[in-house]
Image (cartoon, rainbow over all chains, first blue to last red; front, side, top):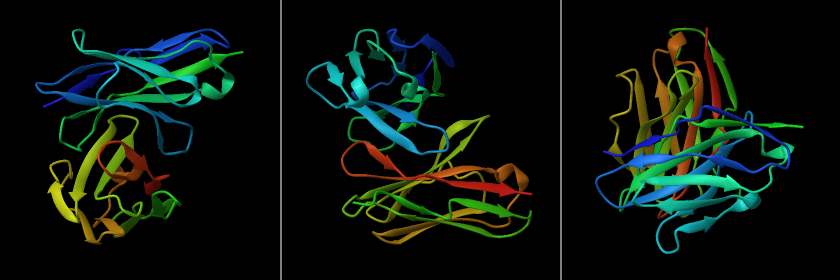
Length: 113
Length: 111
C-alpha cells in the first residue's frame, strides 16, 4: 500500500520569496503523483500531476514539482509567492493502474506581506 | 462543463436523523469517489465506484454509512442514523484516467 508524508504542517513565507513544500511517498510499484491546492471553504483543485515522462512538471499559478525516484520525493516549488497563494496544499499518490488516491496530511502555506 | 456538483452545500441536522448527500460527476468520467475531511483525520477515502460499481468501500466507517451510484450521472452518500462525530466536510470527486476533479463539498453538522 502506498503512503504520503508531508513533513511540514505549516510554512510561513514572505511575499515574493521562493517556497518549497516537501512531499515524500512510499510505494512498492510505479506511481502517479499529484499536488492539489485547497483555498478556504473550497474543494481541492489540481495544481499539477506526474504520470510519466519528464520529471519536472509545470502546473498552474507558476508552481512546478520534480519527481525524484531515488529519493521517493515530489517537492512543490514556486520562485516567487503572492498573497493569493495562501492555502492548504496536498500531495497525493496512486499506484500505476489504480485510480485510488492517497493524500498527505497537507501543508498550510501562509504568505507574510 | 459545470464540474462536479454536490448538494446541499451545508446541512445541519439533529443526531439520529437520516442525512443524504448528493453528487453529480463530470459527464464522461467513469470513476467517482467520496471523501471525508476533518481537522483530526484529514482527507479520508470512504468509497469509490468505477463504471457505477463499488470497487473499494473499506473506508466506510460503519454500517450507518451507505453509498449508491444508480447511474453514471448520480451518486448518494447516506448516513442513518447520524451522530455528532459524523460532522465533517464531505467531498465527491470524479475522474477519467488519472487526476480527480473535486466538488465544492457538503459541510455537515450534526447537533
